[in-house]
Image (cartoon, rainbow, N blue to C red):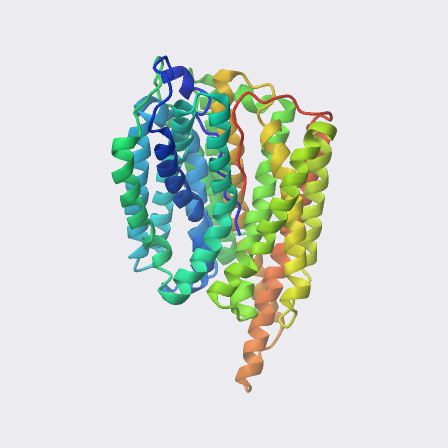
Length: 508
């Protein structure tokens, strides 16, 4: 599974100030909640539903092992990179308008992906899905904040929203398996079209418009620089798998990424309306939370790409069985999240996050013990549950720490940063670990002769090379999670967390 992180985005805290005035609660709010929940589920599903279908899509479109990661990273890069801008647009342009435009755009992008004739077309469609998801997700959350102004009702509404964010990943894995096995991998994308059509038709009469007032300038240069910088960095990692780490082209893209991201920081410091106010990330504890989130996303989401290929390509699982086989990770998250919720007010965020990162890293190390003929019940299920348990201990306090001490004015942006950091981390980690895996597999093939005289033995030799690449990627993923634990220990202050300034962040 991939972590599907859709949390408080820009607009979450400012929405009420813009519109809740005095007319009382919207009588259609509960019906509107149902529509928003369906649209939100569509966005969350697409972070994982394609994972199960990826082996079939890769084969059908002749996508190389080096490029397959773009199916994942194209979505998460544009989603994470444009989430802050999407929140601003929804606030200023109109939340209902942004919500409907996001649904329609997401459906059109899904249609493009479902009809893709080559890898490039699929990558472009996934990038468009992420861009429209970055508009839809913060608009959804802002609309909830506007419509539900009474404390108990708002808690229920956010509970539904959180359940969608937390459980959507598991639903995506199962639905992806069913659609891939009984129809085609293309329906993992095309299924969004009827869902979006119903959501739009119901939303138009039920959802009320609202928007923020006052200063409504957009930081377009900042959005362009940060997204271009991240894409350049991912492409540099991808080029390393084909051209090598010593290639001038590889380092040209990596160097260009560093330059673009440095310019982004410079623009944000000087901008009167920054996309990312630097005061949000310069606080030691919050900065540590964001860096920890990025590293966790890189290690966890990046490594999970290979689990799908191992279950289907090596163990021979069907798509449905692979979806079911990925559920222990979700189970571990749900179990430990309940424990973390009870303990965070007693012992504080730092111990939970540090222990959780270490537990997740150990689970990843355990998973790296897989082989061509190892058993799912002994070598996959237990470490997946352990990883999930560790991640649950991280995610619950992480959402609180990232918002501690933030002013109400910055709360929406700060909430979006924690989610964007995990999405961006997942993109970078997927690209980097895919390069490491393909390089390791190629090195194994070079040093181990394939028995061409015996087709069965030859296939076994090829699978050994693939598994060697997966194991190497899991090891590096564990290392990234270990670094995340060090960041928590060095930067995040001990003690029980304060009450954050905005609504909850949801992680799945």
